[in-house]
Image: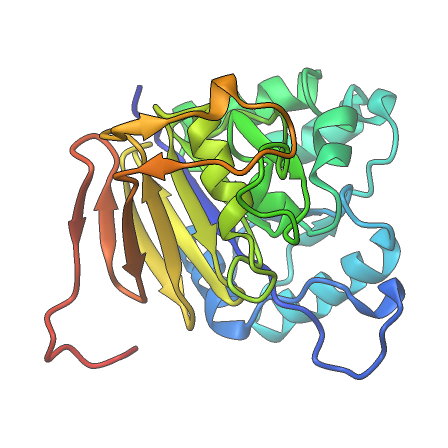
Length: 285
């Protein structure tokens, strides 16, 4: 089913400071990608709601987004700090979503988003607006991963390509045809995305590098934005997939897993499963 709204999942981008505590590992979006979020939402007059539910530091993250959006000229920006399920049923909070042109989910723990907002009235409202209005749902890192119906909830990169390296849970279901992973290159998450598509071979696996995202329109076609790469795993023509018969901790084998490496401006059609890349002579934007 086509949707009138737009999804913008983003791979995240850690603070480049030297601090190592979790407090300083807040998610940032480079100005270019955030500017695209504003543009797709209708411009600087857009009503934008930031939801830092996934973060362990929602107040600080919310303030960072307020500053970033205001730097881009946006004044109608609200932080909706939802920490309990009952807050996703509150009429004042629902009214903020009803009046929004864009909702932006922060990074953190994607399971917090599904646990607190999933299967609530707010979740239903987000789905309705996305399918029936020119409404933007953006999210970085955890906020991107939760968009899928089959959501990567965690898993070890060091145990990559061993069965059990990925933990799957139900996501928000905004985009049912993809399974999304973030920080893909920097954190070496090839193995857990490969296992995810082995578990769900009807889905396309999307690995988002940091400062890289997708603009998904009509639940059908997406465009790559940002400075990094997007890795696609297309498992539709697997000739060998032993995921179902293996015990946990056993090395997996997948044969004929098609892989694409895409960059800024490249496109992918989810229905036709076809890639359209920029011409070789096209300048990098």
